[in-house]
Amino acid sequence: MKENPASKTIRDRLEPGALSVEGFLGHDDRPLADIIAADTGEVEAAGLTVEQLGAFLESLHEAADSGWEGRVPLFDGRIRVRVTETLGQTPCPFACGAHSHKAVVEVFDDKEQVLLRFTPLDAHLIRNHGFFEGKGAPYRIAPAELIELYRLCME
Ligand SMILES: [Zn+2]
Image (cartoon, rainbow, N blue to C red; front, side, top):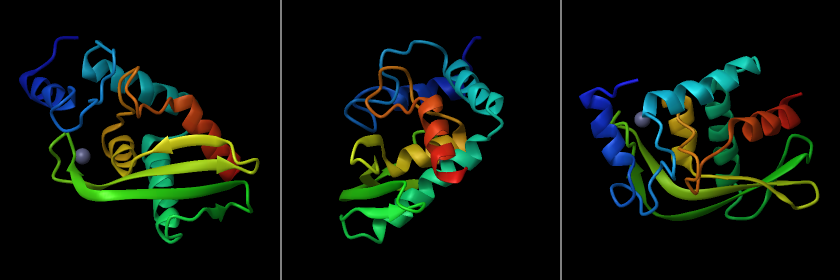
């Protein structure tokens, strides 16, 4: 697929050093539209939507925020969440006008193993843009991993 000029601009904003030191694409050189289509397709094949998964992450972030950097048990103790806030906000690289707090949310299972690490921006990118980041990006969330966590909590 050929990239149109608008998605070229977005792609520039996803490169290392534009909005984040590491960037959002890792070593993924597929066109942005293909990255999004592949991940969104995987979610839909599992019978879910990116809106559901993004909203789920946002709810975990909100719950973690209530814990003052302690671990907050959720879903009958199946998981615990903890947020580490840093100062500042990051604008959405898709230039939709949204800003997300800079923070890292960690999700632990009942044996204190880390199941997932994500930023509030990831939740927004998944929910609003179907973007899980490129392969090799430090905060890429593999759709399969997120689907598994969602099911652990919701089913
Ligand atoms: Zn956005």
